[in-house]
Length: 519
Image (cartoon, rainbow, N blue to C red; front, side, top):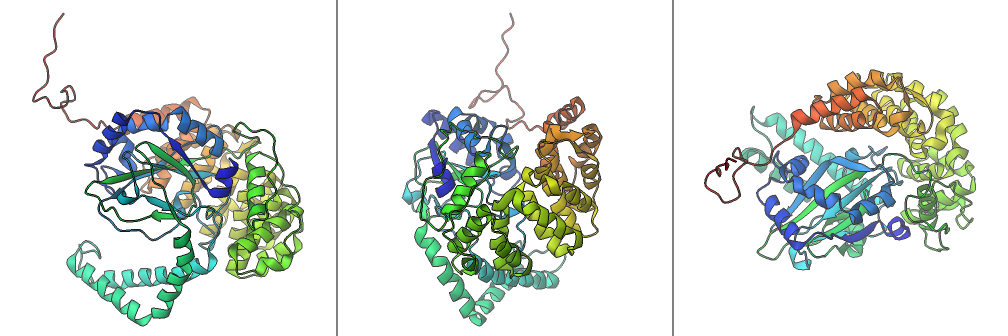
């Protein structure tokens, strides 16, 4: 666990026979990486893959990292490589875990994790996945700011091109759309050489630090959701390479260690990120973080070095020295307040009183940032639960989104009236509904009058947004209610998918069904 917290990844080897992995490789070959036969429907298409996920070695590692009751997220993806080139390093889109405030502040605490599985031997020549160890907590502020400008161009160019296309045409689905896109990209590169050079220079240290995840068939790697990763290199063989990615979700914030823990404290370490690791170690153990050791002065919060700034924030938070943190959090730039927010989360209950008081007079933008921190603190922020609950009805949609999500962690471990979540499950905004279903799943038996949520969750199983559908079925399964269980089973029985052809009684390779022998 200490290695996972520090490095961000752990490698395992499946104990299933090679024949199983060969079968999985063959079953994945005809699927569509981004289409309905594949992608989020991977398991209905290849249900035997669940045997890998149920292996004790895999389940044991997941429970150690994500705690008892952790479960499979509804998003999964088979990354197919033949003969693709290397892929730019990135962090996965945060829409599957938690929308990062300001597009920058992701949550460090391990509430989500990714699992990578190779069904074939994957040496360097097959283009393995690459990761950057110790990158999961680093916000990469300068690189993200420069990359944001590129994304803004992409968004603007896409809208302008779409406005010129005929009905039924799309940018990447028509030759004219693709040609216009290529022209705009070429013009942008000509007009913005300095921006592109800046992005390349900022990305080079990350490229230099990446390592390939090579391994035999059956290699499984579990990584922190926010690990920097990408395809390490191209596949130079004449064989296909599959890497199946599954996401897993924590059921509850930890109250005690979920692994064979010997009671040891975090070892002494002079690395700039050591205060971050120590805080995460304490969180996983359900313990209150102690003093950060005082190596980092308040002035280092302003360091341009992401690691040094994070170390300062966590040290100040653990030591209860909150004056500088609040000053930067309330008045600093986007990049600085992102760093300060991590320190306030590390401070835990010690920061809650002022955070709750700040909500009373906060505008929508500040309220979102405060709710984000309170939700990350989780159960130790219970003193601010009334303030959080009141904002679930706020007129600003972003405030409602973050308030509803924060309820799912802040209210854990105490009776919680279901009414605010019932209202949120009817919200016009899809992400408010999604966060309400996620919070119901996280609270489960803590909810009072939970049966009133069942018909609302059942209706949301048919919502247009797949996140609303995905979290609604998880919520129904986690409510201690016979009505919720019945609703979940009715939906799952109707939605099940038989991956076999119509003549399901025909053995593989047979030309016609075998006759049944009468007795």
